[in-house]
Length: 228
Ligand SMILES: Nc1ncnc2c1ncn2[C@@H]1O[C@H](COP(=O)(O)OP(=O)(O)OP(=O)(O)O)[C@@H](O)[C@H]1O
Ligand SMILES: Nc1ccn([C@H]2C[C@H](O)[C@@H](COP(=O)(O)O)O2)c(=O)n1
Image (cartoon, rainbow, N blue to C red):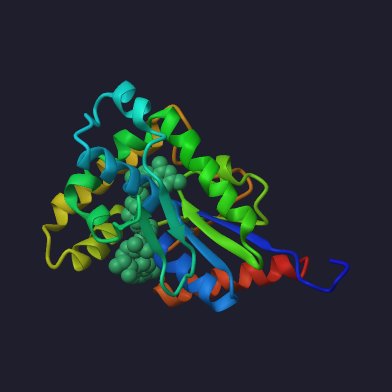
């Protein structure tokens, strides 16, 4: 750039549940001084609002009719990301089971995707140094011109073990089945399904520590910035 400031770098990190998108994205963004956006949290936030307002989340037209109502605000500091709905901090409630079990249905509604995608693009374009955006359709749909696209994978067994650890000993098989069900719903929806972009770098995290994944992505970003 003419004034010597580096061009903002846009990094898209996609993949199924439990592959390490959030942990990796936050650490990479913090290490490189970039903003961070958890797009799953936005879909969870709108789902939380639907549940809280008695909307039938299995009825796409009922969901579509009220999609524009809640005001969703994401804080993009990777060291303390935030998410509010109409000014209420929902970081805790959006991780609860009633939201998790409904979020795939709500996020499949095209009107919801249009609204949340617009919000994501606005946030990404305002990031001064750049941003790491994680989700399911970032490289394919939200930011197809991203400088770097990563697609994280891991075996269902590894992902279930990671999640069971978080859920304090939840049954491994039940957790694995729930992950597979959510992946199938997210990959099978008509509008911008979970998918690897053709130009994404796939990183299988099954046998890697979180630190190794972070180092791998940081190296890829630095190589991109250096024009390699
Ligand atoms: N490479 C890794 N090795 C071991 N554990 C990991 C690794 N990456 C992430 N984890 C752990 O796995 C769990 C899930 O990670 P994370 O929340 O980052 O995944 P995610 O892909 O963002 O999931 P979701 O899409 O469901 O939000 C966390 O407890 C995290 O600490
Ligand atoms: N870009 C995105 C991000 C998330 N979703 C949906 C599908 C997921 O099951 C759900 C929750 O995401 P998580 O918090 O587990 O990462 O949100 C989507 O459709 N597109």
